[in-house]
Length: 273
Image (tube, rainbow, N blue to C red):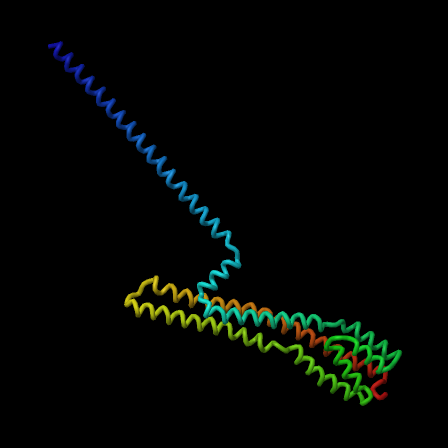
């Protein structure tokens, strides 16, 4: 009886040991499998991250010029070209006006001092020689006023006012065209918008179904042309406002210098000579 009980106990111990070893081997196998899967996943994910980084680097490497060029092509050259033409012509006129206005700017105080010195030394004729040899609208107005000096102070003032209007018109030359392009560029952009939407609806009608791929092309043309027209209008508006402010400043200085010239003539009693 004791031998039988001992055999049963030994059999149970061996069974428990064998089961423990089996479980340990199974756990080790599962752990090795999980570790291998983790290594494979990391190996697969690393190239993906690298690829994404490469794509981001390539995207960042595109310059502003290339981006604008791509958007111009995407917006359809038939609708983007008129908007670009408005920008080119408008900028050409604006730059020409800025250069002309800067060249026409003179030192009015220095010119008035030279005119007064000439009046003291040589009279009206010497003063006219000074103004004729000086470029700019202020000098031209002075010349016209000095030419009427023998006819009286009233004629001098009328001549200055009349010729001042002529010079102001010359300064403002070209502003109407810049204003035209400011208004025309958004209109051309909106026209591209309408045509793009019509094309999108035509594609939907032909397909008989609403699909994002069908509508995306027409909507892209619509949005790009609108944005292009607004950008052109904003750029030209900035130049237009600068030119107008420059002209206003010059006109104010012209008026102030003209008043000073009349005072000089009255002070020297040269309006009757």
